[in-house]
Image 1: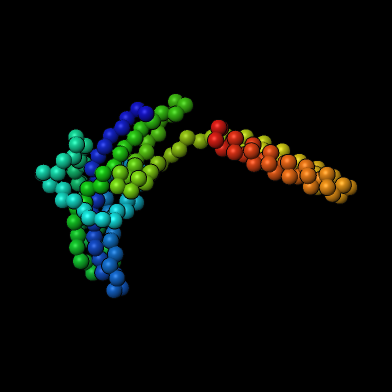
Image 2 (image 1 turned 90 degrees about the vertical axis):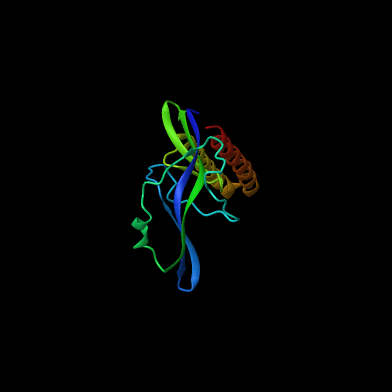
Length: 172
């Protein structure tokens, strides 16, 4: 981990009456390139008033730099309520094999957003699938001569392919 920062990110909440049903739309109030901040969802429960007495516990409060009027003309339905809401988020940066990555965690829903993930080689997955395929073809041919031996070997191969796939998924 190279950076961990707790922030309060500003989002405009619009309650709209759309075709007879109430919908809540959220739009960012702050400019950002951080992943996921355009996809936040309003959590269930009561919202807390975010005023000068709100204890941020030292978290950075991101100031809005996009006007609410920017969104008003493009919203569907009839307006019922609109307000500025601050979402608690964690911004994490980490390094893996010399490459830096950034992740945002929505602290209200625990949803994780990342623009990029460390990649892994597909060679191990390919090796397991090719080996399993060759084994099943050979065992299928054997089953034409001796059914019981072929089926018994297929059962062993299924277990081996499953174990190898599990090992590759967890370890590599």
